[in-house]
Structures are given as structure tokens and as C-alpha cells.
Length: 215
Image 1 (tube, rainbow, N blue to C red):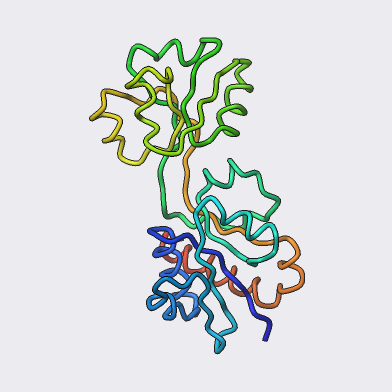
Image 2: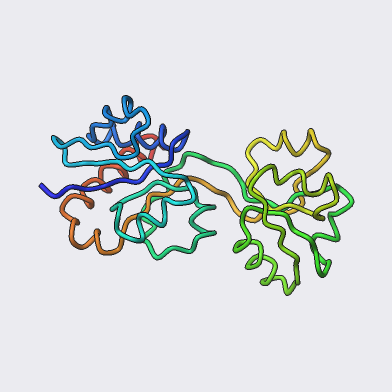
């Protein structure tokens, strides 16, 4: 039996992914007792899991260390990895938006040298380049909302779920860029060399998702 390796990021995406995989007949039980282990194997089913940072999932899949991975569309857009994006899994939903103070509504659309604080510098440059705008990208990894509050940036580009954090800090959504959700990605070589294991799993996942969505 060919072993397949799945890259997961600890947290809510991993929890939702394991629930889906379990419905598809994959024994995810060993993950519940993983503790601090970063590699979890189930020899009986020929499946192993590696637990990584969310931003690293595409790298492990692209490099062939993992055959499949579950990652947010935002991370996939930012990394630009050469992988196959096979399925929209429908969970982990949020929006990728530009946000700022209400008085930035017009400026965020037309200004030049706009200061944009973000965890997504690649997406920010691409988004504003399509508008013909020059921006100053300020890369932050913590609370991006702090940028406008302390005068570091004019706006932020970040994912938004409920919007409550923005509201509590006097910020608002100025532009919606796109909807975000979890995606299943597959290594390009693995799809060929391990297709006999990966393709049936993809079919099972599609069937479960169709049933959940009433289609």
C-alpha cells in the first residue's frame, strides 16, 4: 500500500479537516493523542499527518514532503505555490478586505503612495497594481488593526470574519477583495504517482461535500 501524507495546520482548520476525512473513511484517531508530536502515522491505513504552521502547508505540499494539504485560500494566494488546488472545502469561511477609518473610503480607492499594513504583501501589491496604484506595503504579523490606530498605515488588508474587531476599533470595511475558505491542495507529482490512493479520496470528499450542501 502506498503511503500518503497529509499536511494540516493545528487549530480549527485541522479540526474541520479531520472531521471530513473521518467521514471519508480515514482513521484520524491518532491525531487526538498526538500531544506535541509533529508527525503522526497510522501504519494500518497507510496515512500519515504532519502538523505545521498554516503558512507552511503549501511549502510542504509543493516540495513533496506532503502529498495533500488543507490550507486557507488567503495563504494559497499569498504563497503562489505550484500545487493543484483540487477542492473548496467550504469551511473556514471569511473575507479578504481592505479596512480603515470611515474617512479613508475615497482615499483608499484613489490615493497614491497609500500605506497598507498587511500580513499579505504579495496580495496587496498585486491587488493595487491592478488598480494602477502605488502603495507602501508595511508587513505586520501581529494585530494588523493597530496600523491605522497609531498612524503607521492608512489602511489594512486582512481577513475579516465577523468584523467585530474592526468595529470595536473604529474601523470599517472599505473594499472586499474576495471570499476565503479552506482548500484541499495536492502535490503535482503525487497526483500521478499516487493517483490510485489520492483520486478515490478526492471522490469521497466531493461526495461528502455534495451531501452536506444538499446537492
